[in-house]
Every structure is written in C-alpha cells, then in structure tokens.
Image 1 (cartoon, rainbow, N blue to C red):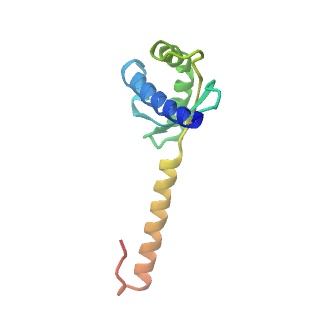
Image 2: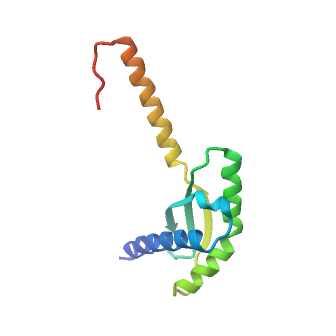
Image 3: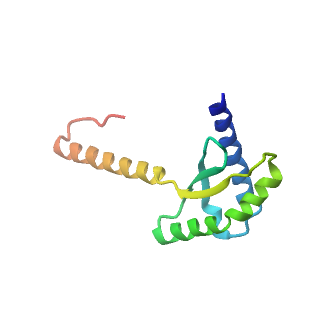
Length: 127
C-alpha cells in the first residue's frame, strides 16, 4: 500500500515540477528540459529528479543541470505552497541518459542492418 502511494506521489511531483518549470522558472535554458522520472525515498524526504535535455553538447547539458540545482530551493519552496505534506522533499537533479542510450542502440542496429545488406544484397530487411 505504501509503495503505491509513493508511486502516485512520484507522478504528482513530476507533473507539478514540469508545470513549475514551464510557468515559473525564467531561465530560458531550462525550456528544453523534460522531467522523465521522479524517484522518492520511502520516507518522502528526498526526491531524485531525472531530466532529459534536448541539447547534445555536453557542456550545455552540464550548465542546464547546474541551473536546475541552483533553482532547487525555489522549486522546493513553490512545491511546499502547492502540496500539503509535513516535509517537502529535498530535490536532487540528475541527467537521464536513457534517450541518448536508446538513440545509440538504434544507430548501432542500423549499422548492422546496412552491413548485412552489403554482404547479402538479395536479402530483404526485416521490420
């Protein structure tokens, strides 16, 4: 029962933080940020927030992560006004690399398919 409550609260926090980033945070660099997941501890004291950034430049991604960490206090304070719980969780931001990882796997699979077609031009590609 408690696990289900935490999962619902994770989704609620993800939605609220997304809304705050879209409406209340004035940093234009954060417009390309998508919150992909929120992972709360069982005691609801700490929330790990995973964000995806559209920019491929590693330096820019790190700057965005630094900006998010700088805005964590503001975002936590805004959350405290929106949600009614005893302790607003501490917000810890992490880059979500799963989308980039998935793209890399797709590229590798495409390369394998191209190599197979080059070796055997009579074979049909599978979908």
